[in-house]
Length: 137
Image 1 (cartoon, one colour):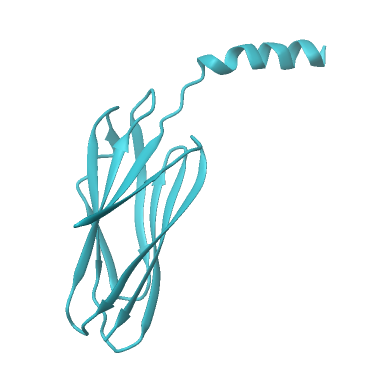
Image 2: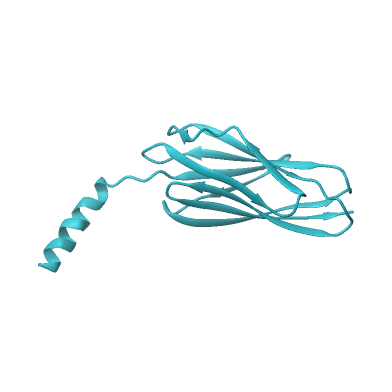
């Protein structure tokens, strides 16, 4: 009985679709691209803003593209890291397949020291987590 159930489940797997996310990091003039490989679970990335003058601000745009068989559901956007990192987005709650949106992330050091934080993009089928870093000079 168990083998029949497993066989039936495996035969249905091709019919199950998942939303997937493709994230690009625009670091003009260079561009770094990262892609969510698994349709579910957490995906980790790193971005370092480098040396930034105290009380000046830098930003980077993360481009999110819905590449699955169904719309990408953005559940929450959060940022951690004191008050030196911030983020804003034009992403809708449901991003249609093939469409793109942007998560703009800011770094604004208040003192001369190293900083770290995290950007959380929480989707219906997993999270993209970007470890953020920077140094105030």
